[in-house]
Amino acid sequence: MTPQYLEAEAKFRAAETIQEKLEALEEMMAVIPKHKGTEKMRADIKRRMAKLRQQDKSAKTGKRGLEVHIEKEGAGQVVISGPPNSGKSLLISRLTAAEPEVADYPFTTRRPLPGMMEYEDVLVQLIDMPPFMEGLTEPWVLALARNADAVVVVLDFVGGNILDDMELVQKELARIKVRLIAPNIEPGEVYPVGTVFRPALIAANKIDMPGARENLAIFEELYGTELPILPISAMTGECLEEFKTQVYNLLGVIRVYTKIPGKPPDMDRPFVLKKGSNVADLASVVHKEFVNKLRFARGWGKNKPDGVMVGRDQELEDKDIIELHV
Ligand SMILES: Nc1nc2c(ncn2[C@@H]2O[C@H](COP(=O)(O)OP(=O)(O)O)[C@@H](O)[C@H]2O)c(=O)[nH]1
Ligand SMILES: [Mg+2]
Image (cartoon, rainbow, N blue to C red; front, top):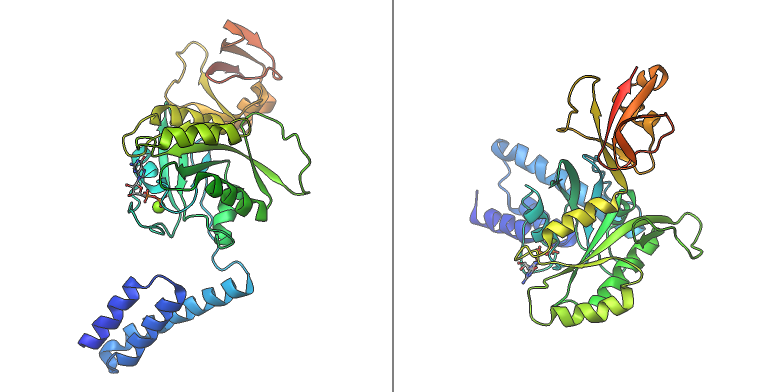
């Protein structure tokens, strides 16, 4: 390849916006030697140009440019959202095996990156997200938040302007009628038709830095009654165990262990059910045919003294052990 081509290619790699990428690709196309040996590469450049033009067009017409859907896994899906540079990626890299890029300049994360967080004996899916930006948050980023089971808002309590940042997150979500609420409460006010409510936690990040605690006090005064706020440090690991617990609690799920009569319970693999589920709900996830064939059940756990007989309608609690008799 000629030096001109390599230079254009380097420009492409460094390009940040669709426009810059397109310009670099055009330059690559212009300087690439045109012979049989580069046929494939030229086709590839053309394909990339077409794709970027398409994205550009959809962005301008306000259509959804890119559709991103992430299959839910584990006990629930939680998006890690917030303004640029607040520490989302560092947090994910601490809690999961995912290895997102962490850097002290904004916009390092351009694609959502899921990772699984271990909490006791279950896994919770966390998604590292591109940042929210005033009026510019990509529609698919907002759609992911709408589709998730819960939302964590990571704010930088040192370098960020926390009040503006929080307002920005709420404003962006309001564009697609998503409203953040504390877990386990019923929305009180009247909201626009079609509003969906997502349980949320505010992670007051960078609490290891001087000044962060003072900002936390101010922030708590304004948002403390609306949403749970947990000071953490993705850097030092401070309060990350508590973070895991609170994230799990956002999901509104319970774990139930099953037991075969005469055998010890299977404590390795709980069934994860929505809070409020009953014995019949458990039976249906254990086996399709169990719901109808269920004769009776025995339960161990909270509100269930050792091996008490429970009916199909008996509500289940986190960590119950249930023996299904079919
Ligand atoms: N002191 C301190 N720095 C942090 C903390 N969390 C993240 N950072 C730094 O903040 C910058 C942005 O982090 P990153 O995870 O890339 O932010 P993102 O844009 O929200 O994904 C990096 O330089 C991180 O090292 C923290 O808890 N304390
Ligand atoms: Mg990031």
